[in-house]
Image (cartoon, rainbow, N blue to C red; front, side, top):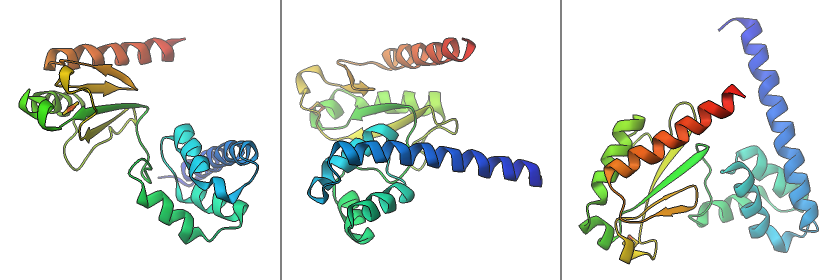
Length: 178
Ligand code: FES
């Protein structure tokens, strides 16, 4: 990589980080900078960025006067929090018993095939999609269940997976063209 490109990358990263910290400041203010509200603060940061970067964790810790290890401890304890960046669109496939029996693996296979993902690679290189496998989503009557960006798709089929992915890709293409 040339020196100029490297510099550009660093500038972009710094800008992105400054933007993230401004959002974290708003979240902290909204929660009265109250250390007892650590979990809601982390939840709101996770909702904003879809993951908690080490910079965000350190910033929250310093701002609340808490040890960084304590904030890390909370972030790693709850499965809800992610320390890895996630794609813009989150696809969750239920692999609870009812969904498994109704062939949820067929949905997984189709998603992996379409998006070039596998058990070690859960996010696409363009950061557009992340695939998550989850336990029972509490909608067993609709098995197999897939949740895409919080929208529940019951009795899903591999063809349905294709439709959903195609629609997202088309919307993204239209948005980029505007
Ligand atoms: S097992 Fe999938 S929703 Fe319950």
